[in-house]
Image 1 (cartoon, rainbow over the protein chains, first blue to last red):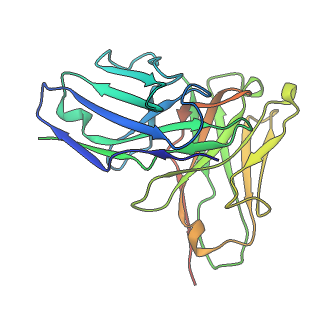
Image 2 (tube, chains in turn orange, brown):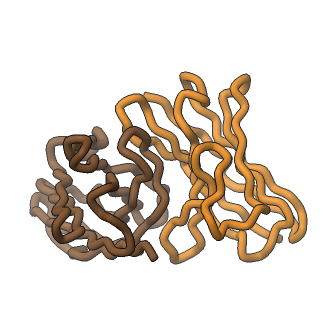
Length: 111
Length: 122
């Protein structure tokens, strides 16, 4: 199976843009869709991006997702940072047998 | 509105068994696969397993850490998904989240429950 590696933490000021990476250890990042989940302190996770770059209804367009095949990575970009965006973010994908794989999570701090 | 409500979390000793339930509403339950994800206190998310919808055979997949000890099942008539957890270990201590999966062929979660806490301790 493969692993997904995320940075431990990132921080930025309100109004700025932050990008979180998610690197797949083996196999193509395009083999299976990548999702991103937001977990605010004390709350359950919610889905902010699915199928690499799709936003569920209700998720602001400040959130965007992408993949880069050459670097075997996915990215979540949050623009116009707000204090409410302060949370842990997890990337997730799956293998050919539909076994789920999560990244270790990235803590986003809005300074 | 999609709602997933977990129940059954408890404090119990290693080696014991526990069954968690997740009651769903706001969608046609039988059309969707469902999965369980857990999170140890202060740690990251860990995929536990998933059950396909009946049209896809209702078959299951499990993480290596729980395979052979945990069993996921579903009752479409009552819109409930279960996880039966046997031979519990201290490392199974976690919040357990019930999730709805978008389709049977892709492990993509769109909705999450609020979670229920399982504590395994002597």
